[in-house]
Length: 350
Image 1: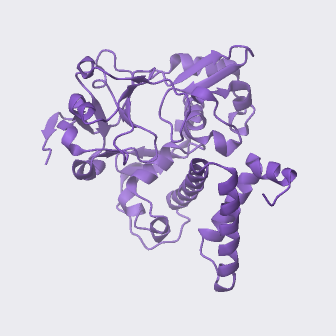
Image 2: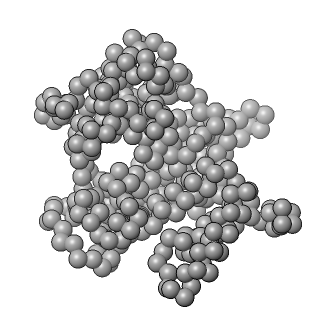
Image 3: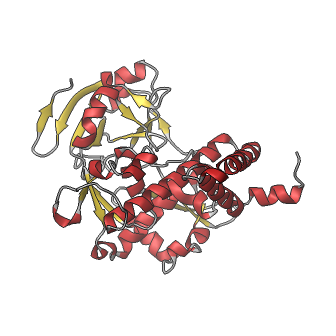
C-alpha cells in the first residue's frame, strides 16, 4: 500500500469517506466544463480505485446510492417549491399534488435515470420528512402534518434504522442494532428522549422496532425488524419451510406500478427484500407488510415459488420477505390473483 497508516485511518473515517464521495460526485456525476473534464475524471477514478481497496464493494455501492438519493430528493424539493427551471406543464391537482410521471419528464431527473420507484423510495427515505406521496402523485408535506411528535420520531427512526446510519457516521451492529444513546446525540433527534423512543416503540401499530438492552454493556439498542435498503448481518428472519402455514401471501402496490409488475414481476428495487403480508389489512395476525394506501393486492403462489427454489422468510413483526430470484425478482408466473382494493374488483393477470 502506498499510503501511511495515518492516511488510511483518515480514509476509513466516515467523515473523510463522505467528503470523498462528494468529490467523486462532483467530478464524475455533474456536468463539467471541457477544460476540467479530463483531470476531474482521472481524479475521480483514482479516488474510487483507492476506496475500492479499503472498503467492500457493497459499501461503495450503497454510498453511491445515498448520494444519488440525496440529489433526487433535492431536485424534487426544488420542483415542488417551484424553484427548479423546466418547461413541463403540470396537470392541475388539488392539495398541491403533482403527478410523478410528469416530474420524471424534467431533464434533471432523466439525467439520473430516475424511475417512478426511485422517486417513491426517495420520498420514504427522506430524513427531513419533506414529502408526502399518494399513489401516483407527490407534494410537499404541509407543516401541520409534521406536528405530531410521535409520528415525527417514528419516521426519523425508520429512516436511520433502515437506510441512513452510514450517512450519519454510525454503523449497524449485528442484527441491525444501533446504540440508542448515539442515535439521540444526532442533530436530527434533538429534543427527543429515551422515554419518547420507548413510547413510540410501544404504540407503533406495525411493531416496526425492537428496543432492548445489550447484554454485557446494559446499553439500550434499537433496530428495525425489516424494510432495510442496506445489507444487515445477523437479521433475525425465520425461514419459511411449510407454505401451507401461510394460505395468503399478498403484496400491496399502486395502479401506476401494476402494468409494469404484470409483465416484469415484483422487484426488490432499493430494498434488500420484497415485502408481503400474510393476509389483508384487518385480517387476524396481520400487523404489517403493505402500505395502508395500497391500491392493488397481488396474491402469491407461495408453494410454487418455493418449489422453484425461491426463499421466503418471516420477520419478527410477521412480515413475509423474499430476496426473489438471482435478479431480485419474483416472476408474474407466481401470481394467482390480483384485486383492486377499493371497490373490490378482480383484475386480469394478463
